Length: 245
Image: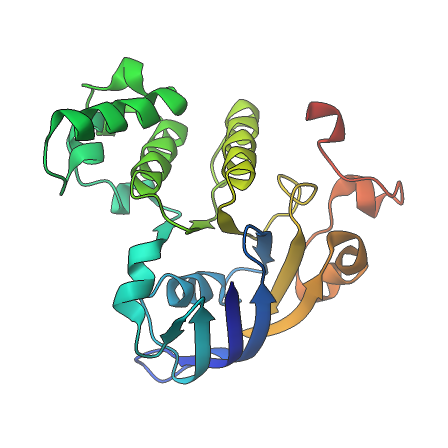
């Protein structure tokens, strides 16, 4: 569904953020996008979300092509940023989920249904700024899914979460996968999600250096500043979280 061909992107200051990135993502796939800080993960996700346009090369999403179709791409993609506070605009959970939507009985019903899915009904009328970091993340993801996107882009979704929060985030990602959503999950740490992805794509200084199934890629990630999962690093040949599924 998503095809990147020879993508380059320059920062406004002139520095190159991405260089010759080429890769394909199947419909309904769960892709892990990893790399050290500054490797270009967030920039690549912003391009896939239609927020940026490539300086060179093309990004295809079905029949849509960027440069040119960024507005249409934004209509089918939703990106959840790493910092929830930059994305939340409403003062309460209710206000944030209904922001920009016509307040009909059907809209409120739909918002409450997704709030229930994310265990947010108990804080429906609470100030968003009084919520924990993990709860704010759930508000952002719930708001994104309210628009029925075909593609969900999660930028560092496990950052700052405790163990129960990480397990809850994994559950939500797997639930999205079961519904056929195409998902790209970025992280600099593989431990939380490597066992559930279909493929890993590793960026290094703006270049795609590794791409394929985790069991093929993991032996090589350390060379690019990415720590392999502890169980894999110990030579056990197993993925983390297996007993927690």
